Length: 262
Image (cartoon, rainbow, N blue to C red; front, side, top):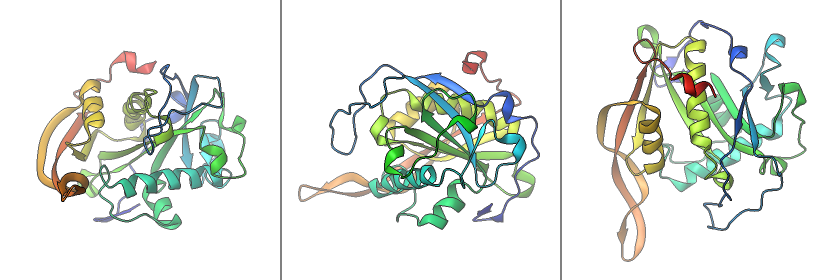
């Protein structure tokens, strides 16, 4: 995958993702609220079950049980792209300043290892039906995250992760589901540690999540992000600079709690 350092190779896998995927979870009992307009959302599906799969541009035949193919589920990728750009346009959690086009999103989010949480209980990826449009995915696309090298070469054993929750489905415990899965899949991919570089201190929900899961706070970057909504000028919201906290997990010295298996 490409980065500020150039192309960085993925580590050699230490195990099979099939040992932990697909991963099933029960959603928190809560009426979700659309963060865009503050309105409660009527959920079209009565099921409170969710399934987490890997998603890849080109999965191998052996991985089809736990990997969704981006080529088969084009509209799912389109829905992910739409949700991600909405997050960028909010301007208060990710550093990108402008929305990504289709190719940029594919390179950024699907360039290494990526995972998606969808509503419903599925035994294998083959059971996930394709949808005709991104809009048809909106009620079932819960969240997604990537895992990629944070540094090149001799430091490529440390990964980075990026998480997105669909604003339509906030309040269901999705961050915890994806965060625990992250801690299970990262060692299997072959990484020795994980570092989140820029968790803006204004992102209270993320900070609470990483602290609750047991990540170490190892640093602070002063004025790391120029974010929207941080200040006011003439009664109107404006941009302002916000510190970022850095979170770390060393998989060799910090065992993943066994209760995260559930």
